[in-house]
Image 1: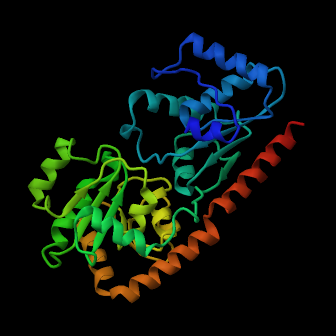
Image 2: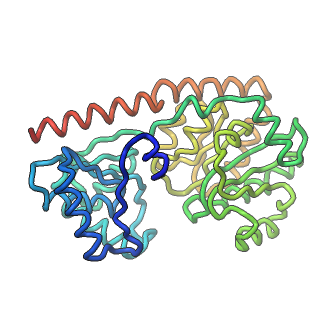
Length: 335
């Protein structure tokens, strides 16, 4: 993201941390920067950076504000790397220090408070979606099908997300193997980091389930708005989530969604799609089947309601306003 940020005229400083823990040089560079730049506010972005923000304040020569940002669901510390789990535990003990701890998910806030994060400085600001980039598009629907080499009328069900156990691609693909027994012409689109033909584990799963000819592995892409707008149904099959971006992006494109009932997925979706239990492939397949059988008009109705909901509650403009008010609030405390 550095080039995009710098193109806006905003300087970016790299602490050159290339290992799980920062070395003395990186810490020294951080302290030097905070003393030279004299910021009014430092916002950490995820666990390691939250601690870095707190360290920076302790070496600052003025009374600056600190916000921690948590962008992660925490169903169990056992799901985390050992170092990350340790940092979460340390952060819980230090969580009274920042002016605010910002969560993008109500569920995430509750989960972190269970392990010791203080509730006193909690604030929830959802992720904002670019409703001008993610839009309904018949043109993209046609062009993506041409790229995939399928009929322009092909029914596409998609999952946008990196290959990670919590995203539960196994659940998605098992549901796919169930659905094609009654709807053999449906095609499935997977995009995200390590979701490609180099992933031998994923290829083995496709072959084992007998769906390899029905699934398109697109890997990591830079044209996610285009791919999302081409889908007939978007899916989040995760067994753990915080605030899933892909769901809001699909809704902004007017694509009806089926999501598992984890994190804030149900809250984001509202009544604009279907919610199913996690790790229940049969329920996932039934929800897909329902959206197929309600026809084009029924799906368009769901899609319109979905986009309207994102525009009203989760647009980038609305969320930027929440951040601005938060910054004004916390900096006023330290004047």
